[in-house]
Image 1 (cartoon, rainbow, N blue to C red):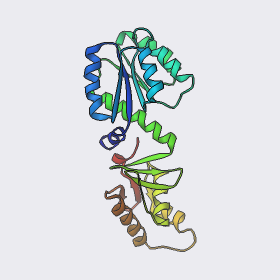
Image 2: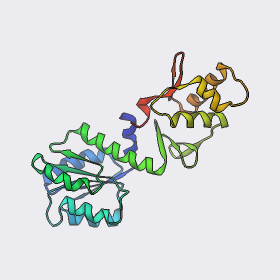
Image 3: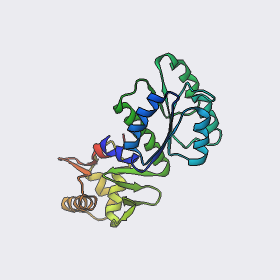
Image 4: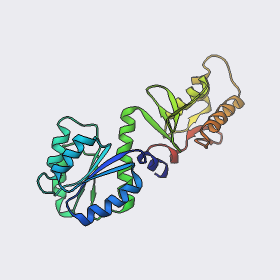
Length: 232
């Protein structure tokens, strides 16, 4: 989750909470995580900020004056199912989550919210945006764009050779399994035979270009992506 935490640093968030003490504490935390934090004291103000600023993610309490959290989400979801929304609720309000489930929320947090649970939920919600955009995080500010077939580091394209591209895409398409050497050979060299050293050199070049051990060698079997650097 540490690497996925980097996904939040250039994002914006809208936080709606009517309790000023809770709002102040959470805003302080969010400010350390996000590029920009917008806060609202009720659902009406939150919706106005949403329309003006188009935040990347929304975190809202359920019980608020003027417009409560559920009504806020209903208004947003009339035209927008893309923006991730996370609800905060007290234990006594959990029956309201049945209604919230039909509004395509990305999760809910029960108060009091721990920092660990808060950041985990936010990272998970942001990952949905990246999946929708075809972006696959590879750790340490590296992303593979599945739509354009390009590897990016901090917004810059990292040049890949044809075989490097094919191997990385093969591993991305099988993120939770070890791809055998035989599978790699069949996919990358379907006609001519290839030595084991050729695969090793290919893996080494990708590691050098990403400045990290993103590809793990599984002795006697094959290779897989490092699960600590990829989405779960």
